[in-house]
Each structure stands twice: as C-alpha cells, then as structure tokens.
Length: 327
Image (cartoon, rainbow, N blue to C red; front, top):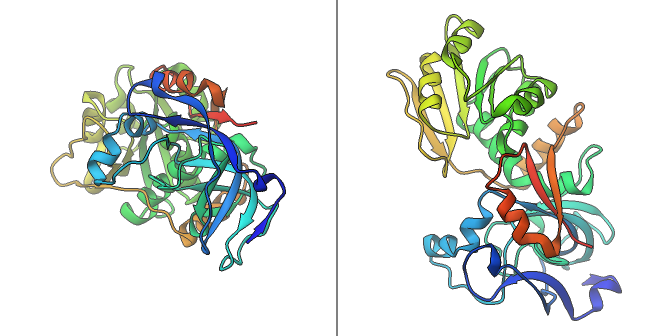
C-alpha cells in the first residue's frame, strides 16, 4: 500500500456519534484512521457534502432500514473530496496525490465528516472541470441521482421538454444543467425569487416560483401541447397541480425520499428510483460537466466542528448545497 507521511499518523479528527440523535450528537472526536483493503483508496478529506439525508442517518434510521449493525463511534457523510493519501494494491486508476471526489452511502469504515476516509475505488473519480474542492465534495450523490433519473428512468432525449421541480435545490439545480447538456428544453420550478434567479442563471428556458400563482398556467404556456417529462425533487399540492401539464404518454421520475410522493395524471407513467453509482456513470457525469461551464452552487460552508450548525441550516431556506470544510 502506497502511503503518504500524513497518513502514517494513527488517529484523525472526525465528527463522530457515540449514539444516534439530534444535531447535538455530532461531536469532534479523535478516532483511528481507517485501514484500506486492496480495492480501496484512502482520501485525505478537505471538504464534505452535507446531504439532506444526513440527518436521517444521524438519527439512526438508515441502519434501521438496512439492518446494518452500527459500530460507535459512528462517522456519517456520504460525499467528500480531497487528495489520495494511499491506494490499495489492486487499484490502478489512482495514485497518491490525485485530487478526487467520491460518494459512498453507509460506509462501514466511516463517512466523510473526518480528516480521512477509506472508500472503494469504484466510487471515486478525478475532480472534473474547474470545480473547487467544496463544489466537488457536495456534487456526487445529488448529481448521480439527477443523471440516473434523466437518462435511465426518463430516457430524456434531445429536443424534449422537461419540468424540474425543486430546480434551485441540491438535486434540482444539477439536474437542470445536465438536462440542458442532453438537449432538453427546461421549465424550472424553483423556491423563492432567489431560486428563480439561480435557475435562470443556470440556463433554464423558463423559471417560476413554485409557491407563486398560476404555475400550471405558466407550464402550459411553455409547452402548449404538454411537457414530455418531469423530474420531481419536491412534492406537494403545487407539484401535483403542475404535473397536469404533462402530456398523455409522458413520464415522471422522482427519487425515493421525496415527500409527499407526487401523483401522476391519468395516462402518464411515474417511477420512483434510487440514484446509482458506478465508474461508468461517474465517467459519464464528468464528461457532461467538462462539456461547458457548470456550476455547483454551494450556499454555505461550515467548519468541521460546526457540523451541528450545518445540519440545522439544512432546515432553513437555502439554494443548492451545504458543505463542511475540513482543515
């Protein structure tokens, strides 16, 4: 195993849980640096994404669903970015010093709220484009979820029209840009005037506030013969009403966890799905990102020791994503 002198230390700082609970359960601790297997890499983490699902894991509900027996101290954090500090002997795609980002949900060796993370090499990629370390850290799970929905579930084709619900949120603002890369015409439903401005800045052909009036009317004006498809990342009455603008034979996709679940009009297919993660899909994502200007919007960045504040910020109005900076 190749290893930097930094990684030769035995312990690291991490935000670790001694038991599941609220934001106050997130505490800085000194814990052992995880050891890597032959098909893993050790990442010196510089930034971590704060996902909408992190509180779900923090409260212990993830292990309840999966049946995984948790071990404490328990480190959460699905997304992160940094520098390769060590590579397993069967890894040939990466070398020490590479700048990478990665996503791994429910990693038994600990998540990215830490100075180091041991990750399967298949879940790692070189940082694309001109992304900052914070942008790369918050990117993978939401971007891969967006891309899975657009290409695999909806089968979005160039020239088709698409509604993106929650277009100023984590998944939505990335889906909007990826859909434009795929040649779609995008009607964005965002949150607040600031969300509408962001959606327009990111290339939406039209953008409206989802809490405003006449969203359905605006959608029908955008596509008088009906929209071809919808990617839904925010549910509710306004969402279901706007979905009436989808044409007969159209289709709707939404990631598992969207609540309330959207309802499809008669004659419209609807499918809930999970985001996927594979080297092929990550490579596809990077190609799309590298094909032109791409913005990963980081609303706020907190220090590692402020993880509890970052979790509270998830419940407040914000655009895009929230990051942790790990010194």
